[in-house]
Image (cartoon, rainbow, N blue to C red; front, side, top):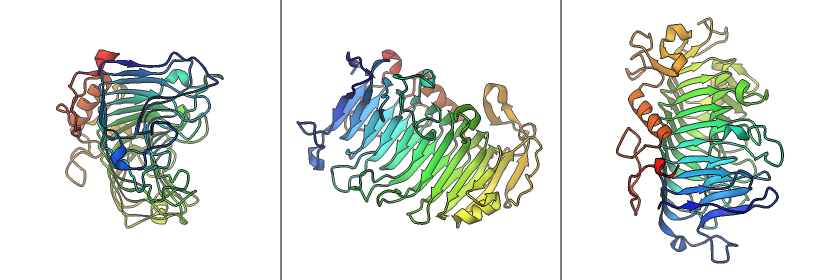
Length: 435
């Protein structure tokens, strides 16, 4: 509680491997292989943990534990010019995990679960709660010359995990570099071939603002190198996706879509996915589908999005209904409002439940100030399948949680996002005390 953890070692040739590690054996060469030997009930509270602006630091905190919480804390300057680096990572812990009211800034992934095969058989990091955080990359890192050309990939990534809640966060600033540049990437990986049970499942993403990124959220099927299970049961609801832009963040190499469902006919495909009541501002498309697999049980309901260039696009087949019928089976589709300058269809065949509009007809409250709540006079106000606004309807929760995440004032008893109970409960002092 209330301490600083850092390094004095300055190097862009060599590497600081961990600032904090949990779950390694005494010789630090091998991870714990028996769950009962994992450390348990660890809290970092109001902790300032950081590398140096001119140093390779790979991991701030390795959270391989039973019950690990990081609250009201500040993580920064975690980067490496030769490989992946993260603020918070776990691949061999059972959970639960709580990341609450933190500032999180790392170059490759800010937060990642999985990425190495667990040493404990059948282990899946579980009960992961990420609430009220500001998760971002430092814009000054973009385009830096060697040796400060840190490896940049995604913001929040899951390669193995289950029962995940991502609620009330600001997740922002990622560009095309080491990978495409998604804000949230859900992609099961049997990293080195020893984890055929690796999976990402039972994920809820709500009340977040996700912005300034090449892509919003990708959901992938099974690993394409080694056998794994696929992504399953993902709910994405009441999120604002702002400035999801290939033009701004992809260096002219594509991008600019809110959602991608990545499937392959030779691999397990993702299933049971719901996209409901989201408002999005992409410059390319609402949804990318493909490349060869067919995804079952997908619901696309009550969303508002810029049309961009393609709206909904399927690899090799085109735009609109043909993309949906080619790459989705047993899908539900209702109330998708697509915004373009003309307010009319692109000329392709679209399913019933597609509505075309202009920004003026949609009637956002104040686009210039980033307020995308619908006015009461909007034709889409209280017009969703459930009688609520199309797009984000729960603005009271979204706005209060975003304000708290940006200000470092989130506590689990305020706003609408909630946190799990850990074996040890930290005080509710706020991260502003460590900045």
